[in-house]
Length: 147
Image (cartoon, rainbow, N blue to C red; front, side):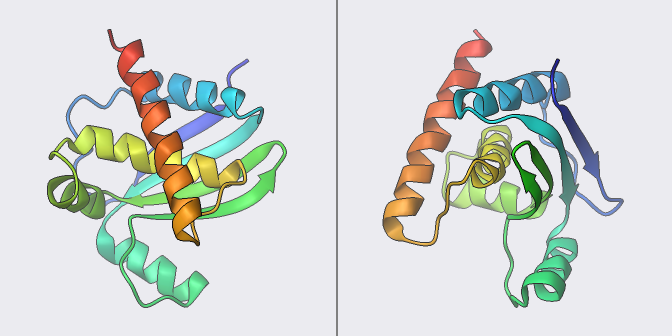
């Protein structure tokens, strides 16, 4: 049985990038969790805009900065979480740091949140590098599923 993974948007969120297939992404995220030897009970991904995520960041984490993702963990074995993603940040980061592929950047951020729930951190340069390698590896798997 596949885990419950919900994808939702708040009213002011930008449009989800073209080509986003909820079913395909959910299947992929479940396979990532399985590869990491984790079980997902429930993850709710909430797509929003910068202001919405900034307000969450300020209120709950006392950070006065923009970010692309905030993960609220409620359980790690099995995984239970709410993951908020700013589609504005995703779009800007895809254009600034990537090749402009907004869908790939969204998938990268989604798997980044899941990897946090699997126990990975990104506080040090070494941790960030390890997470990037894992993100890229799992994105490659997603691309292979498409062909």
